[in-house]
Image 1 (tube, rainbow, N blue to C red):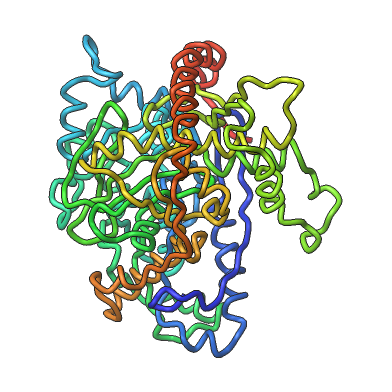
Image 2: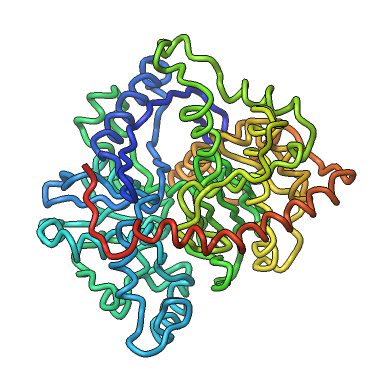
Length: 512
């Protein structure tokens, strides 16, 4: 990608996901091989190779990679879906006599004051992962030289340097974030979690040039010898740079998971709704962010587990564009999906409630419904869940969200953008290349790091394809569905808690 955000070449390589109960892992070697394969495809053109001046990564966040002194991974990486650490982190959060929302008051106050957030009770973040490893895999903990996020691991493989960015280290919850220009480790937070400080990498700004590309990588890809690596950012921060960098300008990411983000000049936390403004890639700013566990993965689940099994009998070249097929089918159904309501909580939820035991459900299904209704209900369910997140997010920002920039793979769907606009009552501004927002953000960070651009240049480079306005005729109907959606949460949450109690309580897990 060029420094002005224009896509010059594009390649994709899948990485296997290992799911076993509440375990969710990937092999860091697979990340690296996918990078090498995709980069080799992009660099196959000699003219393209000669134009490369910097490498800047954007990766998934809340992944924990244990590496030894040689930089080799010790086992697979624990992902943001992995809930094995729920009990281990709960022991560190609770007090002996009195707790507020599962936290000792003094611990809760200190975490919120210094970091702006607290470790996830679901165990899905780096704090929960490291707590689990320390308690249940002590030999692995002792062998670990550094705990790295996915971004940090990629930068290690590119440069040989152990370092993290403020956003990649955020969800270890051991940094004092009160001054966005000086994010640093805090001894009291390290002590509360029981993490040895020497097992964490140094923290550098996202726009820092962290070194030249290692010679073996240069040789493998045929890069110019003076190619440098800029520290980069995790996906949430990079998307925010690519989508909407100005203060208070919001974006909604529709990928496997979902989130809302907006850059703000203040550090603020909404404990009740699990929202906060936290360190990000933009110097001197925080990123107000709200995270939801499942968005596009609902359509992937519908495609792969329910409707289609084309991968069993077709080659990769013969695969149909299934998502476009789903769009066409869903468009045949009127708004409201003929009374169906879908709750998209396939793997728990995080905002505005943190509940690892929630699960998905399809309500009001009858013999009169068809697959068309079900597909539309899935898309509307994600939209209803997004509205559930948008309301407290707007209160955190202290203003109406206005037009929300839609990014991520799901934002390629014109139908889904219109559904979200109608359900949420907010204009949705579709990026020109929504699936490449994080790549564009990484390119912008590389440009700033190498001096080719400044932050003030970015708003003029963020291009949009279309704005979807909400249909006022659908407002009353979707308002009613939204109230039912929230009522379903209140009624079903205790049932899900009973059904899924054994998944996270009183057990130690090992992925096979």
